[in-house]
Amino acid sequence: MKKIIAFLSIAAMITFGLSSFAYAQEGDNQVVTDTSVTTSDSTTTVADTAATAVADTATTALAAAPKAKAPKSFHQVLKEKFIEGGPGFMGVILLTLVFGLAIAIERIIYLSLATINTKKLLDDVESAFENGGVDAAKEIVRNTRGPVAGIFSEGLNRFDDGIDEVEKAIISYGSVITGRLENGVSWISLFIALAPMLGFMGTVIGMIKAFDDIAIAGDISPAVVASGIKIALLTTVFGLIVAVILQIFYNYIISKIDSLVNDMEDTSITFVDIVNKYSKK
Image 1 (cartoon, rainbow, N blue to C red):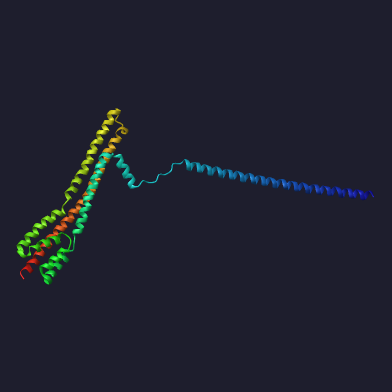
Image 2: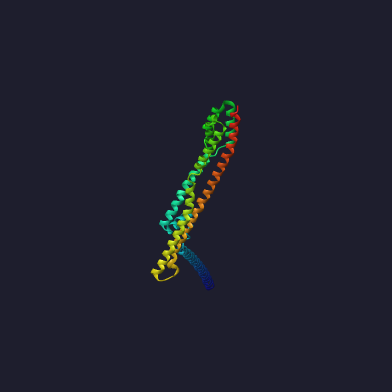
């Protein structure tokens, strides 16, 4: 009996010991797991905090950094420099450009309309002489625009007076037409000369202003004379720009006039030959 009680006692002690060990193992695992989770959570929190701090720093740096200015257009720069040059002389220089361009554009349009196919006109006039005589030729030149047709018309009006009168009429009316072609061109040359002169006058006035500023401040530092010198240079630059633009238009107009005058002279010679040919029939 004592052996049975002793055996049961030993068995109970072994069972209790195993249970205690298993419970202790579970507790340790739970502690390890909880510690791992806590450590993982702490690591995640630190990483998130660091990322947030970096993002905030980058945002602050971007906000604090100066924004890059968009480049100004040519129109904006031109307007700013025009205002800085002063409205007085800059406005006058601008008027010379406006008036000069207006006359130049009008002349270009007039000369473009005055240009025609003179070879075709001569062929039509000669064909009209063959088919309908001088009246048919008058009708052809009457319905044709341009100075060459006007010269032909004046010559045909003297057809009955002889070839000498036809030549005189062509020469006289040709001089009138040449004067009409050159009408207004002298004004363009005036504005070409006037624009840089106004610019140089603005230069002189700007330098006078610079010396006045020196006298008032009692100092010759760059900051004192910068305003006057800027006005002096800007007026000169704008005056020269206006002169260059108008000079280009002027040369084009002169070349166009010379071309038309040469064309009138060549066709007039051929026209006189045609008239002389049919006046003898």
